[in-house]
Length: 421
Ligand code: GDP
Ligand code: IMO
Ligand code: MG
Image (cartoon, rainbow, N blue to C red):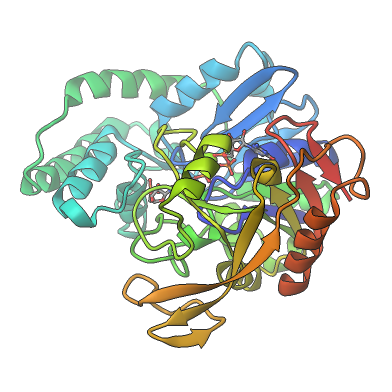
């Protein structure tokens, strides 16, 4: 069976922390989409790591970690990432498997990302500039380079062709702020390094693991509201971030999908451009950012903050078929006397509990419900029953609105600050 953990908001819900926390229950942790646009933070035993491409099961010695075919890999970033974990995980290479069908982010994909954003001016997506969009564009345009291609004798030729096609586009976009020669030196070093790893036919591997009764956790990146199909298009990422993406991103049949864990923050954040109905551009938003340390794990960018949006959450629970909820970062609101959550929208003056088809061009005003805050520190080590009554009624409200149980509550960035109900 393949259980899934994925973000229900605009990313950065805490997927890394919880995937790591759940890993002891699994034999394999697998990434199925996204790439180094992801930044998944893990904290344990006084140590802190940010993972971009490597699955969050890597710190558990008996778990295998798969970078699936649906992921896009930047060899340069992956090499840097491995350097950050190598001391903690000297045996990492035995437990890290990489799909031969995963697509490669080239230096010119990154430059194209910057060139496209630059050309968009005011309408820029707020991309992480990791080359994600251009790499997926080449994948669907049938012009990409895959991990398996790195091993072929004509790799250099293919690389040159692809690079030259990119350079034409970059020139057309009138972008010249880059040093490709320096990037290429790092790239080819990193490609050689990548080739020393376990590069596998991952769809056979994962299906055999399923047949052998192994337990697999598919770890999502980004969030459901950034999904290419159902997110706030065009302000989205370029992959399917939903549970549906697990099948194509790993090569498994729908019948093998088990439990879907949906993870959300007790409030809401978004980094980059695009609509965010419950955004708080005031002191409360500032407090959430400061107390929640809401700055990008990969890019350091300041995250926009706002109240919980039940309309969006209901939508993403529906799209993913969420079985169990995981609620993060309530501790950030410990000092708030009052909190709010959007329960419906007024779209162009008409009340609705649905996300409009084009959130970007609709005039959306959230309708809020108020809650008394819990106004005290929530203990993470006494179990759920010991928690403050106001907090528990906030949790019950969420469970009832989404008709789904909250099974895990996280009250701090560290692995142990987690309550399992
Ligand atoms: P991911 O991309 O979904 O893995 O999330 P990120 O790592 O980008 O962002 C989540 C941030 O919140 C990280 O800095 C985590 O260390 C931190 N974090 C996770 N859970 C909690 C929590 O329950 N409380 C607090 N205060 N911080 C948390
Ligand atoms: P994790 O896995 C939050 C956002 C970017 C931008 C948009 C498109 O850590 O939750 P891209 O680089 O994919 O072309 O950017 O998506 N974005 C994320 N926001 N968390 C992420 O990943 C994100 N990955 C991409 O900020 O708005
Ligand atoms: Mg993140």
